[in-house]
Length: 130
Image (cartoon, rainbow, N blue to C red):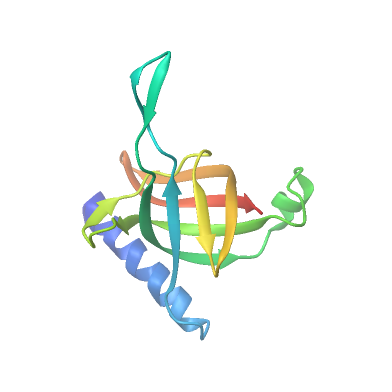
């Protein structure tokens, strides 16, 4: 089984996990900030980019609670696949500059862990705060 096949299985597993909780597939919006172009003294901001992502909201584990993660933080597992604004499936790369909107509430990405195999990103584990 190739890393790409494992990646697809992880994505489908996240959909199944969200569905098994009774809430159905959990989708959120990943908002990447506008990029700057043009001259340094006169930058031009482009539009922000939005992606629909599949995710599972999880509980903090003992390690998280004892390692300076506030109790108000939420933990999210995000598929490495997403859809851009025109519905095309794309690779999702999450950074601490991004904002995630979930159930009408915006969260900052505080800590991000990339889960990968053979150089292929399988999913992202994100600690986020409002």
